[in-house]
Image (tube, rainbow, N blue to C red; front, side):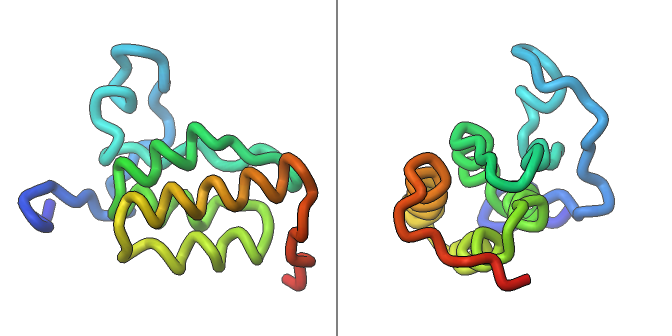
Length: 110
């Protein structure tokens, strides 16, 4: 594991997707070691998962961005990967508002 600003960064090849996410689970206690759960289907969005990916940052956030269902969501997510947690959570809220209320969602061109 590489150190990044005092926090351990887990290489994508070492992220765990097969662990339970319940309270007290490996992923709940070590979010940086687990990729966020993928978006279930196009048109759905889990705000809590997005916020958790923002809190974990690094490889977990990158994995989350790759899991998003629509191209515009992935592009927006990638635009904040190197930014602050506040910017990341703003991105989550923007996607959630768009998906939840269908307000000015960009068309999926990919």
